[in-house]
Length: 296
Image 1 (cartoon, rainbow, N blue to C red):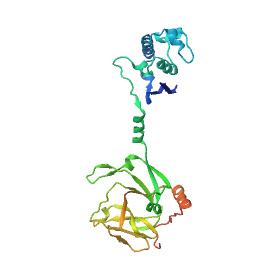
Image 2: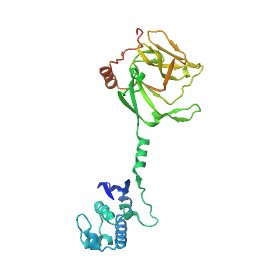
Image 3: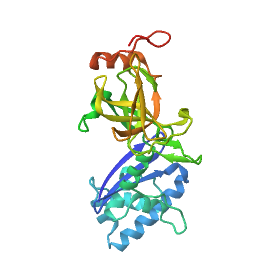
Image 4: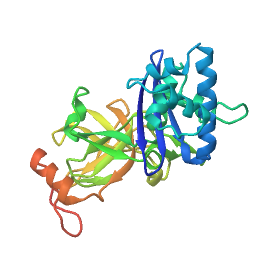
């Protein structure tokens, strides 16, 4: 058994990591949660019991330490007259084929702290870690092999769930972000807007177009030099989009492919960081002025 430890003297707290049979177990030992004298007595009693089971004398146990101890020291430990430090606690437990928690909490009926497997810790971290969403330029989405230009991060509560048709909270998986590269009149969008969309959702349409889903779609033919555009999904399955300064386009359902359903539009990011980077790296610049440009 290999062991690692993290010891914080101010908090009197030990994070004990044991590696046994190719399995990593992590235990959080809070020594301040119990009476120190009682802990010393408990440790001493169990050291004595385990030593005798192995048919070791106190002198033999003392000699098995990395830095050999004396028989007198082992005797004081077993009598509970000395408070053993964490380094010695872990080493003596290893020598006796036990764990530090076995020595501290081994009384019958006394609750032991849970030992967590590495897989359970990773699972918990995944549940609490933010979503990592790849960011693509609009021009990139026509090529499935394109590499993201960046990543955005979102909390799983705000970025991982949406309100379902029945009012319940539903999970949203396989999200991506598209950087808008044109000014659109329908749906109303600006250059450098960030559109979060899911490739798992199915678009819905309503007679009231304001309730219809916005989607990201790949057209059969380029429109304004791009194959992929945002659009409004209509109840008959057609798609409507319009770049400002150009006539509206309505595509029949067999002339485009839906890549995803829009979840969120982001415009409230720090322009000094993201917009400057988009302009310098990818030539995308939003005109900052009141109202919308009319001559594009």
